[in-house]
Length: 357
Image 1 (spheres, rainbow, N blue to C red):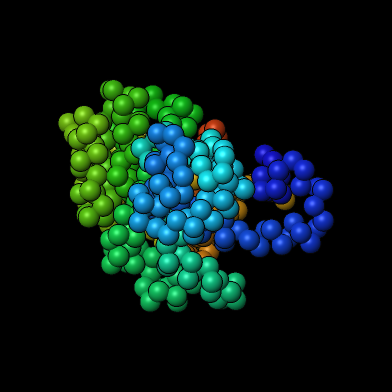
Image 2: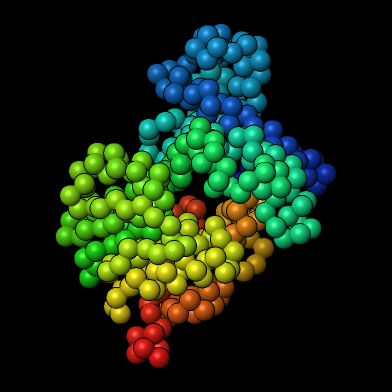
């Protein structure tokens, strides 16, 4: 994987003096803000039909023409748009990813990157470094998931971001993992059903249950029905800290365990174990942090976990220990080609659990 400096500065980054490279790194929040604004305004969708001027785009977005021009000029400099002639802008390949409803869209994720609560959290991140506690509650007055429930507009942006990323991850999981032998799969914390939809469509003999908190589960009914899976995928609301549906051949948790500190993660895993048959599999779709200094997207996500959720990204050894404490044996790790660095961590019941010891 290329180093972050090459990703950020390009192949000629070595020509910049060190102080200038650090200076530009410090401007990351500016690029984040600009990308979020462009996604919020829907600039990429407006340019999908062809080049437009800043005045045309300003009229369509109810913004100030010259100020919008300055935003577009900045994003041209990092490869999102291009000014093909004076004050006439077009999409670049990177900008295509900011369109909505297209493969590999990251529009909702870009919008989420600029929400006020996230910015406030990072502004006070020293609290997390000093205490080891997530600063989100300190900055907003409530924990992350309660905040999303109390602010449905931002909650919808978050769900959209998870769906955007989930589309990419789901394709990689379906391609990488052999689901043969699984008749019924239970997607624990399945959100809007992106992953279970991909799995069921690719395995027509399989049925499933999408399990999430009641209001999230309810919102999954339409996308599941739209995918013509209502007869094969049951929607169940509940709380995985208390119990999960019983009787699945596989229990699937994507980007769930990383949200929680050790004891709460173990509680979720033990509840899955209680619901499982002796032959059931546990499938965790998570990022595994590699050793060494190389760039890895999981190291960035881990900082989000530290400051926002109180969770963490983990190494293979840490997952192995976590599973063991919850009564599982780590059977194998299946890497995927997901750009998010996701792997499928397969756990099975510890032999002592199977034998009732």
